[in-house]
Length: 87
Image (tube, rainbow, N blue to C red; front, side, top):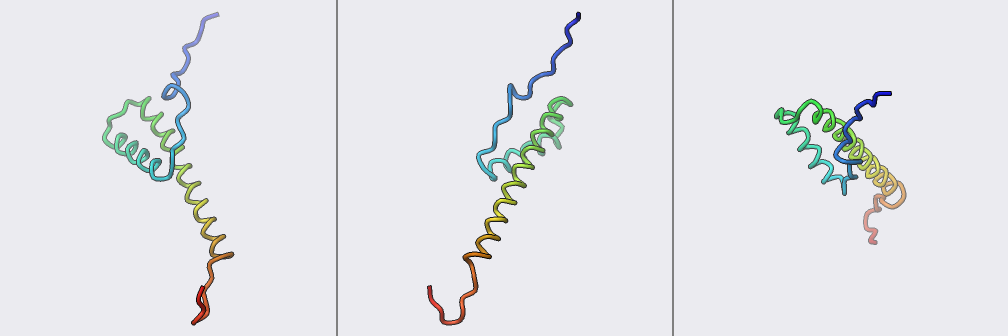
């Protein structure tokens, strides 16, 4: 039975998880710049697109988490103080 060629593994394994929102945005911006500049082969463009989609999902999740934390703070802790009230 003939062996079929295997697909190349993406970046020698699973892509690393970004350390934070800012680092994910920097990486995402670099991917977009590289793709727009036409620096990537078709195969590399597909891998970069996939990585970009992962980074975008990560950033969206971080923003949603931050929004949820703000809502919790606004509902539970932050409130308008009546005039003259001091903490």
